[in-house]
Image (cartoon, rainbow, N blue to C red; front, side, top):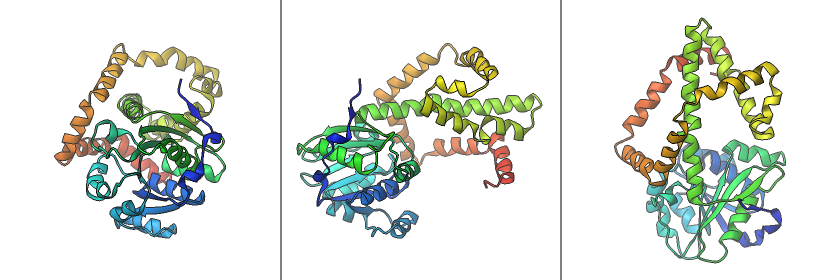
Length: 330
């Protein structure tokens, strides 16, 4: 069973008089920086001079280069996309990662696959919100928390756990409805990639197929999209699953809907689904996917851009664009 940390285990004094650098002022970086400042901590922002730099200034921070923030900070929070983090780490963070500092990740990916290998004399911790950046910002403002996975990859100072819990508390994870759950970089990488490679991706392509079949059956394109996801009902169902549970949320549907889902849903899974999922686990564990993705990036990501362009040019995407313009969303 996973360990759930409690607010009573937090010692915020571990961060007293320490500087915390947020590296990357994107969705997560902005939310966590604002929450940590609100909690009373000294927060630095390291970012390139772009729109995020301008946003940081509007939010009352004085952003600096990544190297400058890393040099001044005691705790360095690396909140950059997985694919660009290693290069920025090597160039601007590693030279300033001196003995006794803490390097924090919100994703285990680069540690798991050794794309980043920190020196042995620094603490390396994981604080990974299971919440989009806007939620990390908005929920604490309403007095609510959110789940985070936390873990200690390297404890050089003996204070890694204290720092980890203080950061989790500072961003709002211990507030009501939140949870701070013990994990690891390897486990966080596994569950994150597994979801992306299985049900999450499958859902997108299944919706695409459902749109095609409905339109072929005489349903108007607009009505098909509204039914499948454009109405927002799919998001409400997801929220109900989170609040009530996977099967308990069925009680919010009509009996006709419940019976239809229970009798027909499983037939679309196919006999090989569990084998495909186990193969996915193997490809994550042995680094096959990470190797292919890194090679793809080295070539300029041609396949990625091709696949994305194909998806954005699909009949569903074209109909969606027209419908969303009518609905005032674009």
